[in-house]
Image (cartoon, rainbow, N blue to C red; front, top):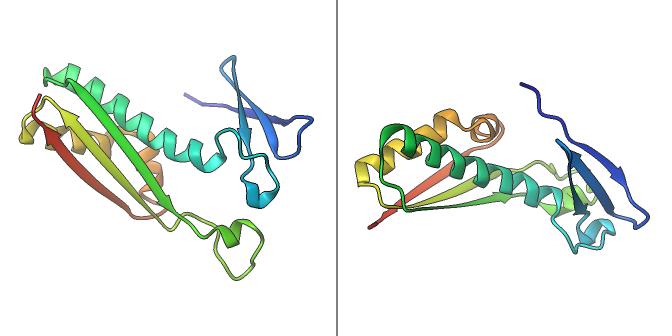
Length: 144
């Protein structure tokens, strides 16, 4: 399977239209790069992809294994130095580290640990980025 997304500039500086699988959405450049910063930025999309993929993996694995799952909240955060983004050559612009918080409602502690492990093993976004920078994964299981 191959995923594809295409972007094109709009008439407004720092704004692009993204198209993927017949869907379209607006992405803005952040303010330090002269963008309007009114829509999601590329970093928002990157972190959102990690959180969304984790949510879907947990949902799917819970269904496969008959694990009760009443709610999933995944929060993804990433650390970077915006000076690198703005052209400071001595600053590496890449993400330096990631944190993911997985809050599960319904499963037991053991089932929650199994869902977290499935997230680590089966999420293509997680497995791609774990090789790029360290990921701290925090799991909280709440009563259903």
